[in-house]
Amino acid sequence: MVSPQPDQAPDAFLMALGGILLLGLATSFLSKSTPLPRVTLLLLFGIAIGDQGLGVIPEVFTDRFSLISDMTLLMVGFLIGGKLTHASLHRSAKSILWVSLSGALVTMVVVTLGLIWVGLSPPIAIILGAIAAATAPAAILDVVHESGGNSRFGQLLLSVVAVDDVWALLLFGLALATVSGLNGSGMDGGIVLHSIQDIGGALLLGAAVGLPSAYLTGRLKDGQPMLTEALGVVFLTGGLAMWLEVSYLIAVMSVGALIANLAKHHDYPFHAIEGVESLFMVIFFVVAGASLELDALANLGWVGVVFVFCRIAGKYLGAFVGGVFGRLTPAYRNWLGLAMLPQAGVPIGMALVAGNRFPEYQQTLLTLVVSTTVLFEVLGPVFARLAISRACESDQAGAVKSDRKN
Image (cartoon, rainbow, N blue to C red; front, side, top):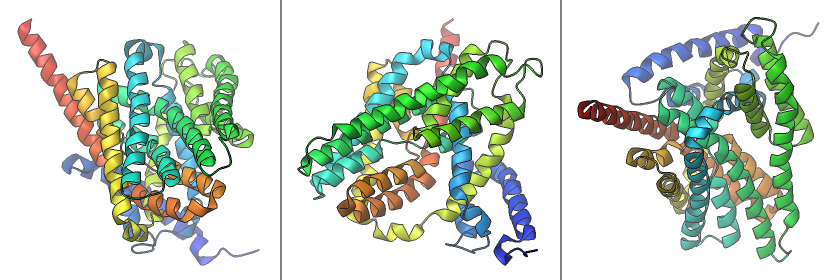
């Protein structure tokens, strides 16, 4: 019998797991008395115990961060998809489409022009502009839940983030095709077609799994889906999406949306997932913090600073313009863009894809994206929490004013 390695010993693993889960309770308490949301506190704790700090987190967690990340994002995507109900879309469909499209497109344009202005070559600037359009759904979902989860602004934000990922994938495909043309190889329509197939294939897979799941789940226990079948649907969808090489996040979002809209026999089809998703979120953000490369911040430079400020400006301006066309209130227009600043693993994945296709840009892309992701992952949830708080205060003030008039 082979004895476990010291860093993989059961006692170290169990102590670390228990400590991380108990930390989730502590951070929930601390977040109520500090301006920092739970997500940021978990990330900071991860940094403190990771290789950049005390180095006490077992390698069994950091070595499997990709798997932990995928499992967490699958559940996050399923829950966010569940917010895309017929009632919410009927009420806010125009606003969701305008804000998500404008937020992604304006961000790409502002970041691209800003980077060209400081001397970066147009091909790299275009790719980075497309990467800047992406948003991290996990951090935003946790902040929304922490803030109550039932506010109109929070529900609108989650719906916008769900659609935002679709636009980000399309823009990234267009960016790669454009850069191929600028480099003299001609406009590569195959890249754009691949992005469309990625999204379309994910939607078809979501329908193939979601339609039968909407009618079959929740039958064993009256009105409630069991945790086993809920996780089975989520992980099966994710595994099939990875095997078929389509977007697993969009696939699982579409499954969640179909079940939410078609499963009339469910009292609440996402209750089972929410019971276990919070546990994965705690582990995910702590390990994410432990995996952050703080050394990359030293290489940020002026180009990185411009990228950060242009992305903030682009998100704010894009959401504001979309809010005007979507007829949102002034408070919503002002705060939606700042609530969409969190950015995590998806941009790094995009940078890797772009770097593999254009090796001459790989070092610049990875250095800039990794360093700025550290900032947005830690500070983005702070802005998201502030935005939700201010928008809710505006709603309450408007309700009080309306009552006085009546």
